[in-house]
Amino acid sequence: MSGAEKVVSVTGASGYIASWVVKLLLQRGYTVKASVRDPNDKKKTKHLLALDGAKERLQLFKADLLEEGSFDSVVEGSEGVFHTASPFYHDVSDPQLWYMISKTLAEEAAWKFTKENGIDMVAINPGLVIGPLLQPTLNTSVEPVLKLINGAETFPNITYRWVDVRDVANAHILAFENASASGRYCLVGRITHCSEVVKLLRDLFPALKIPEKCADDKPFTPTYQVSKERAQVLGVKFTPLEVTLKDTVESLKEKNFF
View 1 (cartoon, rainbow, N blue to C red):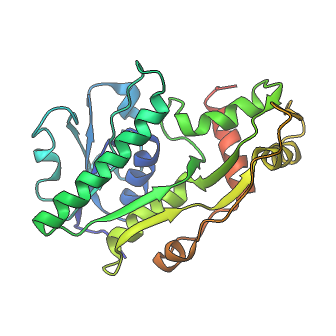
View 2: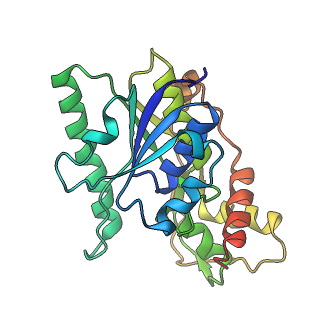
């Protein structure tokens, strides 16, 4: 489906997932109204303005989640809104926990609001999102991969729900373009323990120093399954983890993170 002559909005556009959403929307011909906290902050906007089609069809707007009404101009006249913005507080004891809480509460509020106002809504719920970075800064979800390739002595006893950022961005657009899309879509490409991930990284990058020992002597955390059926019906084709890991590491290298 082509987005020619269609206008959509993306909130938090300078973020990891949102940057890919913007990129894929522009590739499909959409005009994108994108919100960022400060359009004049080149570190946050340069990678967006450099995207193919950005000069003709990307408009940046200043908006802040904590300022009521600041998103009005962003969403006005749009056929759809890709809402990815979420507050992330660093001055708390566990910022990742508060980030997850904020996402949960925001989704609850969104379902309530859309139901009360007759708005069609779909929620995309990804696992741990990795893959190449468009933005110049390191995001939290890619950090575990960087640690494994950047001198860590041990790997954590953790089972991860991996998914490629490009698959997540594509799922957002498929959900918008598919009139039958509804409810929540869990996006997990593959579930593996970190011990399997370090093996894959060693095979992909034999020259890198990859940890061989687990951080503790406890039994490995179990793996499990998350159904892909709904996502696949939507049209999502999951990228193999080997490809995603390779592209993630090469992107981190290109951006001089190690």
